[in-house]
Length: 466
Image (tube, rainbow, N blue to C red; front, side, top):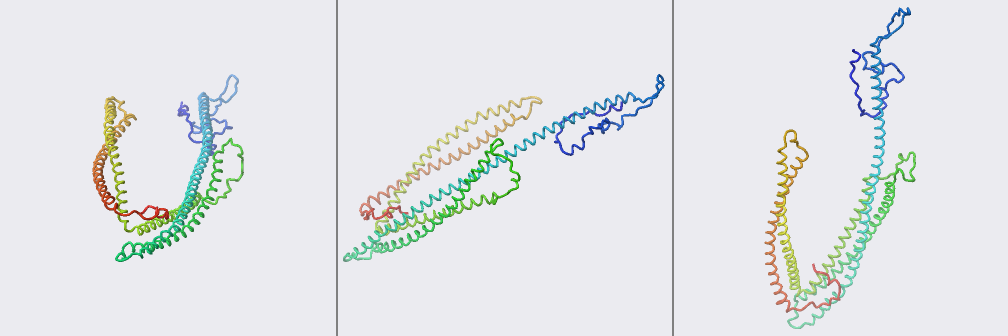
């Protein structure tokens, strides 16, 4: 029975897709030789040879196989059937898997392209939004610069009356008599005021020339942004339509060789860099414009400050001091109010933290009780399952939460102590400021004259003093 010692055939699903090399190992279908189909499964390439037997009944000699050959032939047929059916089953599975894989690959590739189109549309939308924001910001900046330019022109025209008043004051002071004809601080201040006003006029003319040049630069940068934004709008519409295109969409068709056509002139890096450079140029010009506006504003405020100080040299010290003291007192009162509110909020915060720490006790008890009870499992049930890990993580998280809350509580208590100290300091400082205001305003400034200028002289005198 040596012919039946072949190992049993096990049917398994092939994990290798059908390939051209597989055809080389296929059996010869047209070859009916069982031993060739079996290959290495048989002990020999030949099943046996027919022997000659003499039949005395017919007195003839004929060829016959022995019974072992007959059984071996049947066994080979069974093995061949199992082998071919297993091979066919694997082939069908490989073919079905190849269909699924190619379909999934095609679908995934199309989804990936659609996703990339969406990302591209998002990138275009992002840069288009940045461009539009920069265009709007530049338009606002241009209008602001125009407004500052008009304000500066008006302020330059308004300096004529203060200059005339200062010169008239100098002429009127020549009518003084006797010992009063002294080169006092008032006269020095009036002479200085005339010189300051003329210098202020020269500064205003200089910044007006800068504003004229800067407006041209701003408009050039804005024009470049508008061209780029228009191109982005066109590309966004095209890619958005391509993103919405599907297999069932109308208008799709074969375009042979289109994948070989490349009419691009930029790469993603240079594409983004082009827009970034336009935005950077606009931001640079806008920053220059803002600095120029700041320069105009500082020039106007400095001129107003210098003219005001020289015009009211005698009373300026008291007026400045009263104003500074009043502002300081108001700010201190505002800070005191905020500090008191913060103390109240901090006290509530401390109570909340203490309550939160107390609230963590029951969850910790529950988690630790669960862990303790689960240690009483027996034998193989003592499994480090996900529940065990989750409970351990829960205990660690609660312990970490309590630590964090205690740290916050300690910091809050220290902050409350500092706030109480700050409150006492502010209350003492406010009392000092009230006393200073009473002395300066009631006792000193009450005896002095008010500002002699007409407020309609010009807006430059209405600007806040730095």
